[in-house]
Length: 96
Image (cartoon, rainbow, N blue to C red; front, side, top):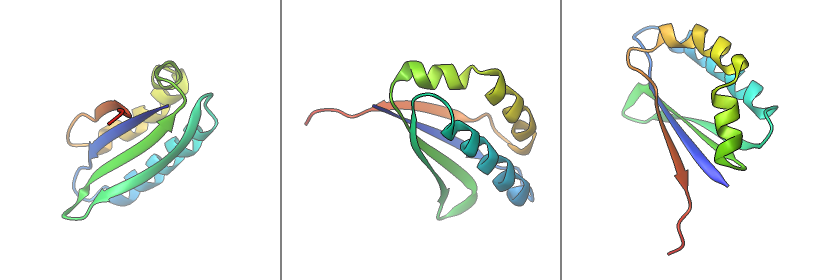
């Protein structure tokens, strides 16, 4: 299993529109092969700074969703609401 951390910064006054579109993207990802779970988080000190933490079965499953036409189309509506490019970090658990 991998975890994908998606970091986004919303342009001022677009929080409500972002929340609606982001929710739709996460709901669609739920149906993607290999998706396990996901959650949306807000920076407690900066409400325009948002994170999505998603668990995927494998990096191949994540890559398939990331490069899918469906995600591309959904992101086309979300990207104009951001004042920075989204940052994506793929994480895996280490053995301590």
